[in-house]
Amino acid sequence: MEQAGESRIGQPRDRVWRALNDPEVLARCLDGCKSMTAVGDGEYEAEVGAKVGPVKATFKAAVAVRDAIEPESYRLEVEVKGGAAGFAKGSALVNLEEVAGDDGDETLLTYQINGNIGGKLAQIGSRLVDAAARKMAARFFERIKVDFDTA
Image 1 (tube, rainbow, N blue to C red):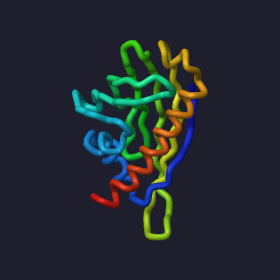
Image 2 (image 1 turned 120 degrees about the vertical axis):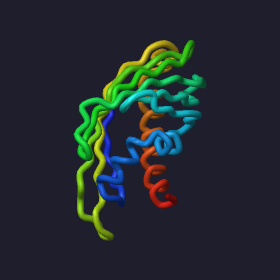
Image 3 (image 1 turned 135 degrees about the horizontal axis):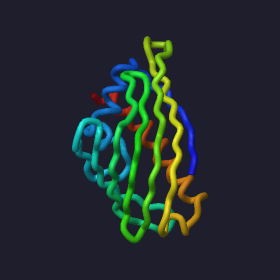
C-alpha cells in the first residue's frame, strides 16, 4: 500500500510541529482513537477502533518518530495489530514547509506512506483498505485544522 498527499494548514510551521508531536492532539484528531499514550521519547501506543469494509475491530498500534529534524520533517514507523482482523506495518515520511498565506505564515504538510497489511485486512482487498486509509487521512487533516481553530 502506498499513499501520498498534502494539506495546507493556516498555522506557523513550529505550531504545526508541536501539534503533530502532542499525543492529546493526535488522539483528538485520529478517527476512532480511544487512547494515545507517550511511552518514551517520540514513542506512542494507541488503541483505535476502525471499520474497513466488513472488518470492524479495535487495533493496537505502536508508533515511533524517527529521523526528526525539528520543525521540518520526520519518519513515523507504525505497527498495528488487530487480532483476527489482521495487522499492518509501515512508515510515513512527513515534511512541513513554511509558505506565505493570506493571513500570515501557513504550513504545507506533505506525506508519503508505504505499508503492508495481512490477515483479514489483506483478504478484503487493497482497494477497500486504500480507500479507508485515504478517508481516515483526510479526516485527520481536517480535524487538525479545526483543532487549531478551537485551541
